[in-house]
Amino acid sequence: MRRRDGGAPGDAALSARLLIEAAGPGVTIQDEGRFGLSRYGVTPAGPMDLGAYLAATRAAGADSAIEVSLGGMTIRAEGATLCVAVAGGEFDIRLDGRPMPPACLLSLAEGARLVLRAGPSGAWCYVAVGGTLAFAPALGSRATHARSGLGPKPLAAGDALTLAEAAGAPLEPLALAAPWLTSSDAPIRLVLGPQADYFAPEEIEAFLNARWRIGARSDRMAYRLEGPAIRHRRGHDIVSDGVAMGAIQIPGDGAPLALMADRQPTGGYPKIATVIGADLGRLAQLRPGEDLSFRAVDWDEAVAARRAYFASIDAGATRESLGAEMTTESLLAENLVGGVVNARD
Amino acid sequence: MDDETPRFLDCGEAALSVEFGDSVDPAVNARVLALDERLRAAPPAGMRETTPTYRALFLRYEPLEISRAALIAAIEALIGPAGVEASQPAARWTIPCCYDPEFAEDIGEAAALLGQTAQSIAQLHAGADYRAYMYGFAPGWCYLGGLPQALAIPRRVSPRGPTPQGATLIGGALSLIAANPMPTGWYVVGRTPERMFALDRTPPFLVAPGDAVRFEPIDAGTFLTLDARACAGETVARRETLL
Image (tube, rainbow over all chains, first blue to last red; front, side, top):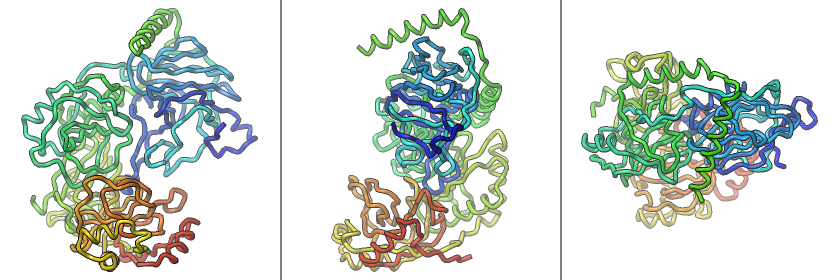
């Protein structure tokens, strides 16, 4: 078994471990991101869906989380009962076979198995374990940026994560509910620019009116948007400048790319618009093949949405006991999961 | 574009690009770096991080702490009515570089394209004074202005294979030191034993944006000696403080 840390063997405080029994491609550890070094070419990385990440880490009392891709993950606790919070897309989650709601807080007893698989919707979910992962940050952060080799390698079957100060008492599983964790078909809001002037008004209109589809080769670096080609009026090369998460870059072929958490810190194609902070998580949770549309807002509206989004996150998710209503929800989950399996056959 | 007043371009609601020009130009870059220095010396409330690039300063901020208008006013006050002064390099680095063909894989190809010899490319490249305009692409990839006109070379149509660690490259009107192996459209004309980025070294990055840079030609034997020392964590480039 690979050790993923420099923990001192035999230290009682480090005896709690999270065992990764299975992990699909693209399952990584993330914290809020590696900030402050973009001037040296360092990508921030961090979670694709910050709201879901914060819901999981705050519920569990964790300083980082495992970001689970559509490839799914299976984990088991060793040496202690671990406090685990899950939040993100609507994944299919089973605790020793028992269906759990897609956002939940639970105790993972020694030997118990938590299985996370792609569910009816959503592309990422966050698994936060109470305590501190016992490995040193790289350049001040524990976030994985696979392309530059910073942070831990993507997780794989056989990995074991040691926890310093594993926190959490046994509890009955609770459902977490929060407005920002529910999916919505509302258009993704964006602010035009910084290079909207590289596009004629009718091209901007075409961009805003189009129905877009998330392309197959989308990942933590960029989401490809399939739809009409967007033409430049002033050429497609610009002198490289800084890139925000959510920037919609239009390269020479006219096919937009939404630049996400693992983007390069600078780029040399015109950026027609930038997705607002409050909608980045919703964009991130779209899967390849799913559709979306955009709506342009001004700075004031973007800031109002940001204020509401973070106020809601700070107010926290509500905790509900699973109780009787979970029975219905479990049945529903079974049906939906069955549907997904059939669709793939 | 107006030379005095930068453009303030929204990059979403929480970042701003302060654009001083639209070309790679030493005077434009000097204004970017000067604003970067002033903002870092006295950061306005809500400012999170600045990223200098060739012709614009990218600035992340928290709009729940400062409005866009207040931030722009704070930046304009730093620029001043006469326009921001040009920044001067705070330090000069002398970076050892081996131009032997064994360490300069593309120098023959570049020589053929430029109508020069490998030797004249090495002399011109090592004889110039550079300035670190910006980092980009990947950690420790340092883009240098000041390449002699005679070495300006169109980038490749399709990228070459991964460069060696420490590759010194030319492309367009720029030179570049690449920290780690990556495919590139530029031409490898030399290689430095210095680590532009070393995670476990303090500091992990040596050259700061705005620093002056020179290359010191070294032979293959010296390269190997310095490479072993750099590998052991020693800094083999030399730094002089200028300000």
